Structures are given as C-alpha cells and as structure tokens.
Image (cartoon, rainbow, N blue to C red; front, side, top):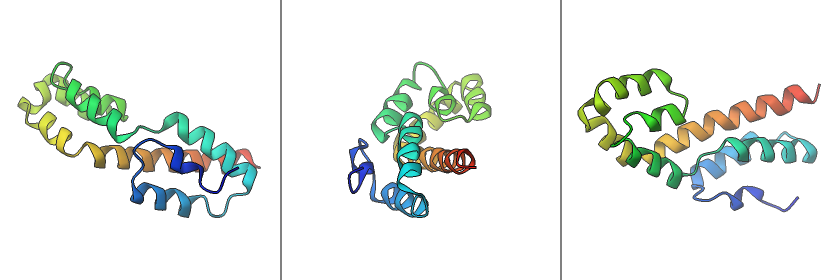
Amino acid sequence: MNANPFMSFPGISPEEMAFLQQGTADLTEEQKQTFFLVYSSKRKSPQEMLIFCILGFWIPGIQRFVIGQIGMGILYLCTWGLCVIGTIVDIVNSRSLALEYNQRMAFESYQFVKMRSF
C-alpha cells in the first residue's frame, strides 16, 4: 500500500486527511486496506455535496437525505428547503456538510474494521 492512499480522494481537505491519519494510526496494514476500501465506498466529496445542495432547489432536502439526515430531509421537503433559505445555507456550508458526513463514515468504517478483526 502506498504511503498515503487518502491523497487519491477527490477534494480531500487537510482536516479530513488529519482525521483519517489519526484515526487509522493503530490499524495494521491489512486493516488499513480494508478501511480504505470501506471508507472510499461511503465517502462523499465536497464537489458531490455541492451538486446535491444545488439540486436542493429542485428537489428540496435531497442533500440531507444523501448524508443520512432523514428528519431534516423531510423538513426541507415539506417547507421547500425552509423557504429556500436552508438550501442556500447548505450550499454555502457544503464543504462542512461533506466533512461532518465523512467523519461519521470514517468512524463507522473504523468500527467495521475493528469488529471484523475479532
């Protein structure tokens, strides 16, 4: 495995990189490979999140459904994106939405890898 496989992720931020390196520090090489595969299948790039947020003008709440916030997605759907203001705020904050989601997915992937090794 190359020195830093996380660099291959599109749009990876320094914060996400540091989080992943710190989170996988205690894993073996085999576990790191499994983590990489699991996490890469779940990860959303900031560019993808921005596209989903823009689509929120036509399909309110889609960005929230994609990141697993079903309640907020339903709220956005019923209020037409909180009268479009919520959708605009999500566009502005799309990078942080992606980072928060990716951190949750990294934690889930880490738990999966650790449980699998027992």
